[in-house]
Amino acid sequence: MLNRLSLYQKLAASLFLIFSAVIVLIVSWSQTLEQVSQHQAQQKLHLQLAEHLVADNPLLKEGVYDYNALENLFHTLMLLGPAFEFYFVDPSGEILTYSAPKGKVTRKKVDLVPLLALIEHNNKLPIYGQDPRNLDKEKIFSVAPVYSHENQQQKHLQGYLYIIIGGEAYDTIFSRIQSSDALMITAMWFSAGLVFLLLLLLAIFRTFTQPIQSLATQLKKIEAAQFDLTQVKLTPWPNNTHNEIHQLGRSVNQMLVRIDSQLKQLKHNDAQRRELLAHLSHDLRTPLASLQGYLELLNQAMPEDACVQQADYLAISLNNAKQLKNLIDQIFELAHLESGQVAINNERFNLGELMYDCLAKFALKAEQAGVTLKVEPHICDFMVLSDIAKLERVLSNLIDNALRHTPSGGSITLRVIPQGQKIKLQVCDTGTGIKAEEIDYIFDARYRASNAQGCKKTHGGLGLAICKQLLKLLHSDIQVYSQLGKGTQFEMLLMKS
Image (tube, rainbow, N blue to C red; front, side, top):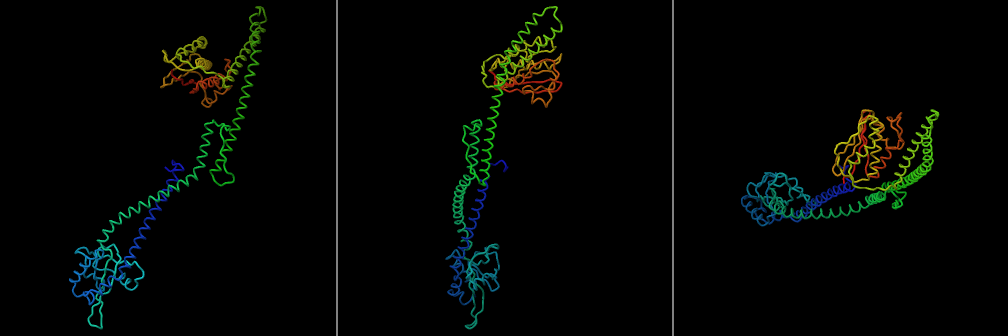
């Protein structure tokens, strides 16, 4: 899942989680600190409360003898101060009487250790004592010892006045107020954290993603300019830096300069090759045409009693001249196609008529070879938009190529398959087929597959290369499917009209 995220998304997710955790910790810590500070202040403020009540109230000043009266006193004091709960415990910590309603007190005894600690060392506040109403909670408190006066000289510890500061009623009201305050504080902290997070993200993302964005923008411009560096200014990257993105940018610049140099060299070499082929073809065509013409005249004017051997030599020379002329014509045609100066004349025409015309040109040759020519479907009425002359040249080359590799008794089929707004045109034969490892090379100029070795039927070897270039000009492509010994299928896509 993480591998699908971009660098921007990973940084955003990481920082958001980190700052969310920081915000939660800060809010929790601030609430805890606020609570401790509040308890310390409240306990310090009411530290002498129990002592003053014991000293000023007659029921407690001389000792507790009437627990019912004491309970009524506690109840009255609780009405006057709802935030306090009053308990009277004996020297062992057992609760003897209290101000709470019946059934609210769950403890029968409280621990005296925090009470004695507050009496003896009241400078380490806050000190928490057990809450008689809850077995799990502790509260801040005020405490004072209560003595009974058996005589004027002797005092006896009768118990402790134990006052819970912030009782259950106080907690209920305060929790409601605190919940709304906490919500507001949390919202403020969270909002402040998000704003801070946004600012930090913007700063970090600008630092980390600006070089990447600059590199991506540069590559898009170069791609739009078809990798022509003369139309694009490369971004200068700082030297002697440990920033990996800057290092990557410099490496990309060097690679682009190297590729541009190699492309220019390849274009220059290709232009020279095409120019050489064009000049060579043009220079050879004139003497070859003259040679062929004179050989034909000699062959026609040969007397009947001429030497048979001389006639054979003359026929061989004429045949070789024709082969050489055919090869020169193909080289000239291929060079012309690769020059990029060929005009395309698209027009609307009937594909079926073109297919039948092409087969008609090879009908006699196919009959002599014992090969059947056919069109599927037989009634083929499809209108296409293309250059009819160049498409005819493609079909002628493919049919001629199929005839050379299809033995007697085989067949060649031109098949049309509609596909939406396009038409698939197939040229299928039942010939010798092509090896799988050779299919990728059959369109290379002068490449001859192993099924053509020893072929006595003369050909220039450039027919498929010319087909490839012609279909490229027609904005189409040619696919090959073949099985050795079963035949070959060439197919291309044409646009419907």
